[in-house]
Length: 340
Image (cartoon, rainbow, N blue to C red; front, side, top):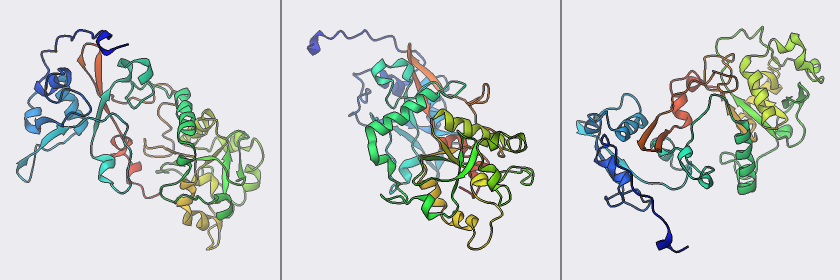
């Protein structure tokens, strides 16, 4: 179809509360009118943006910049500049300033045509995890990225086999509900979390005296063991199954906690902690709560309770501040821990 045959829908009236920069997102005849190759849009000084609480776009901008934002630095007023991006962010470890500093505001995926729903637009997050969507992500990564994502940026192109490099490298078998010595080149998920203030004596841990019993199929279903597994670990075991993985690594249950000699398995595992996480297919970060009984938000009903900054800029067109994981954990106990 020729371009002149394409029917262009009429422009809707601009909401009266939008300020001039907000209008520029809507009006294609305005400088910086929303095309990816347009120059950066000058949103003005923070102190001026703060004076426009009724502008939906300005409100979203201030939300994305975070609480406690100063309007000046070294007695100089701070201005805000917005640029366009049509692709997802690509982290560069050589440029750490690119990883966290610049917030993103994107189109809500519900307001996009169906072919665009698989792209980098943000979405309205429901109360519970959509595991079908997560499985699709993993499948898409495997099909589109191939072996590229199997390489560790921290460990180099070749990742050693932890079952060989770490003596007595154990994994939780979430299918057979036991703790076993890892098979060669295992495909597993690792958990990053905090212990918090828990009673380690009553919490189930892998020890020399119970390793043989915990290796038996179904051992983790036995109440004398199952009732002592913290909620976060139980939740992660369920997630691992939902994602069709077989093995899970958790420090308390995969390192013999009392094998503390210089050549013991605990010391060997701690020295190779970069390999433990680098060789994992995925790492689940349990970042909420103050201890290992906090559980995983979104696995059970009414456990998420997240704030989702969304503003309707025009009729049927909603924008959302695309939060990063750092936005959720910067004030958490997890963020203050020393352990991976």
